[in-house]
Length: 625
Image 1 (cartoon, rainbow, N blue to C red):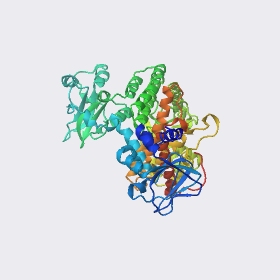
Image 2: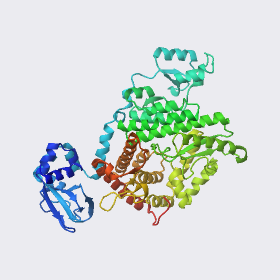
Image 3: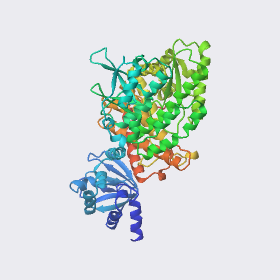
Image 4: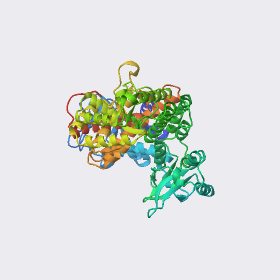
């Protein structure tokens, strides 16, 4: 092959859809290519005129217009255009003009048609618009993971073994042995029909019955766990895994039409497909010292990498890592109470930010707070809670969760307050959306009670959902603040890089990627009064309203998933290479597939931000982001 053709082949092979063509097909394309040059301002394609080529941009920039003359897209190196006319009647449907001096590879219509008819990946690419290609890319990843596509019903091999709450301990133990089960689903038979009342596991029998030397005549209901966490039979296995991690339970009753259909255990999921995050959580609760927890924390990066390599999606990974972080925090609180004694008044320990959203990764700091009972007296009680907060915060730092640079931690007395004060905080932030209030809103409006009187956190969630949804002024200022963080996409759909310090010639996939998406999803979620915290669950709630235009929710979901998974893979590759993981990415370290679809995702975010300004009438100006 001539040197010029080799250069063309090498360039095509970097960009979709040509990067997935077999070698012999790519050579066939290259041997038939023609080359054309267009000066800036020159029309390349004119509406209604004949077109016999697929146009591929070798260098330069092109503007593509709709039939009405409205700008449709700006594209640059590696992009293709002109395909829609070729697929229909060989006449131009989207006019195009050279924005810069531009070199074009022209692929003749017979070659285009051969690729379109014989290669599914090529056909998918040229037939779909940017957001649809993004949906396809996300779907391919999801379909490759068994936990994402398999239903819980696959794990159910038998009906649940049930017993009345009045059954004696000895009888219950005998039933569990005879049925070879690790749990009993207990039914309240005082009502008709009987209802699920609780569950007893092998562990409950050991720790609550044998260890306490309870008489064999004790009713089994005395040691059961109430407040059952259940899951519907049509749910996916990964949803069961996330529920177990989030709630720190090892057994889930499966229900269908309100009736128990079976019980699945953690071991059932492990047998189906190993996800080692569950082992880390188990080991955490077996540790009795901070040093022991620190040793377990060294397994977290390997767990993260393993999930990435098993094609888990960002929701699974973020929830699993958040579950691990919660477990470290919960165990530290247990150890802290064992050291300091029982708390003088009830309290709730709250996770904030990414942990509360179930979107935590390996590069993270600690954001937390305490909600204390209204009977809290600082002079009598605060010495205890400060000591407990410091024990937990220092322990988390030992386990790899760095101190919050902004001091958003329960060690700060401002974030260790009675419930009535927290109500005042949130009410004031919503009614008086000043710069500091908006900054706090972007952190504290992602909250989750993870230990103690978690009902305190639920009360705050309900207060926020009620007041924020009624305050258009607050939502408008939140929208303005969210618009300060924009995706790193330039005028020509090129990446905009940092220009100073160690991050020179990189872009930050958290600050300029996932964070802007989370920000705008949070605002829509507040507007519709949702109590959800996770971004994907918030999108489900938003989808039930008219807040976003058609396809807006799906496009945002796909954009968030793709940006997040590129960020996740970047961190996993750093860990495997023995480097410190971070969020700063160089475009040259991304594959052509990732570069192309990241641009699609960033364009979705940019469009969503424009709609955000329109939807909430965001005032002009800037705020602290």
